[in-house]
Image (cartoon, rainbow, N blue to C red; front, side, top):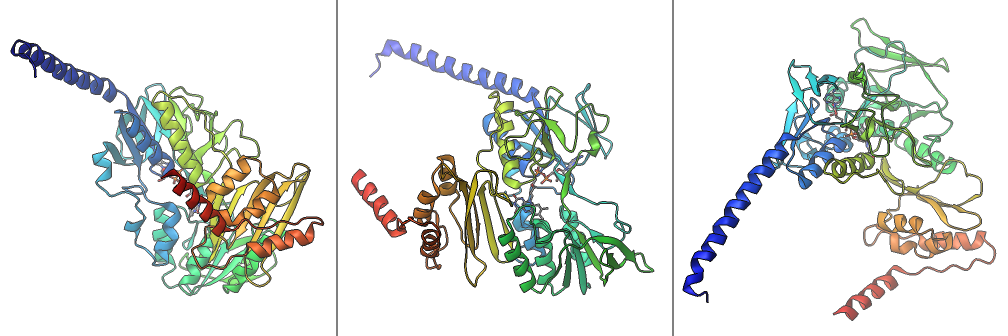
Length: 483
Ligand SMILES: Cc1cc2nc3c(=O)[nH]c(=O)nc-3n(C[C@H](O)[C@H](O)[C@H](O)COP(=O)(O)OP(=O)(O)OC[C@H]3O[C@@H](n4cnc5c(N)ncnc54)[C@H](O)[C@@H]3O)c2cc1C
């Protein structure tokens, strides 16, 4: 109990603390709101940066984009076309999220940047000033100057508007041609096939995506695409796209002399960074916006992240421009730390990627190049009938695993990442494969067949599986011992 004469002191201290606390908040907010962070682009990179800056500061944040009012998942666009979801469902956050978190969204497009005045000129005619600027303007589909590439019915697949155009242009289409075999090309083939549109798919490579996949997998996926009744034509280039009398696409010709009648042409020959609006800005660009390892451009206070950023010095084995979802997200997180006074180097860790070729899921971890590198060895297993495979590239001498490619089996990212990071041997990885298996319960398991193949091919090898059940029992034992 307080003595009566101490009450006034107690009240005084409480009042002083209250006043001090409010003065501090007002001062802090005043200082903070002075700092205005402007982000060009509301894709995964820009939005991740915005969310993480908000988590760590009270800065004013504005995100500008004219593609969509709210952030959506670009990777899910195909499912909207195929009727599996509505566009509304591609938005990872509710519409109220942005206001609640004080992230201002400006539905506009940046026309040009004045670095001296720290302002952006918008296509609507307005201007926005910034203290710090993050360029996260993403990519656009490539076009290579083919005759007819701009006629009605010819397009790439990148934006929400591309999806809407494709929906409209293919509503009566009977036959479509896709040019360029990569991940977006195969998605487009699946989309069109889902609407019973006949698809001719031109790729210049000998086997599907063989610039990335080793020959066995490239052949397997090629045959899978054909199994889905896609007319896949390898080593075939587009020559010309021809219009009908209304200016709409009527046919294409190939360098093999073939003419294919079609009502739609999808150009999926890669993407390039969106940097046109940076012309004359003084921000150095090459293919993309040039950045150092801190994602800083040549102009102090201006950064670039995601698909549009190009590293002056790429990390070993990595490309200067990386156009994948998760690297964009990581760059967004990194830049948020830097802006919130924790200057951080971009460190994406071990490479991974995932995609789908119709119903075959593909995952890759670490480095699996189409051809073995010096000092490397491969172990490859493929199911005798089904399109399921596992490949591990490893160092011949140390046996350390460099990379894992898997089709039709789902592996746990955490396990693969850890094994490669720890330099685990091929033998260790094979014996522990059940630990990484992420397929739903009751799915068929192939680890025994995989390990048997390894034992047959490597004289003296006598690997045995550390069973999944065994691992769970071990985990349960550990948990029990803790309680
Ligand atoms: C169909 C499709 C499927 C994909 N699937 C996968 C996948 O399965 N896995 C994977 O890893 N990656 C996938 N990707 C790639 C992945 O989506 C991109 O790497 C990622 O979206 C890039 O994010 P970003 O934020 O850097 O740029 P973006 O998502 O391109 O966002 C940039 C935004 O900036 C806006 N913008 C551009 N210029 C201006 C300007 N001047 N003013 C205002 N706004 C501007 C653009 O309109 C856009 O909204 C896919 C891409 C596509 C198109």
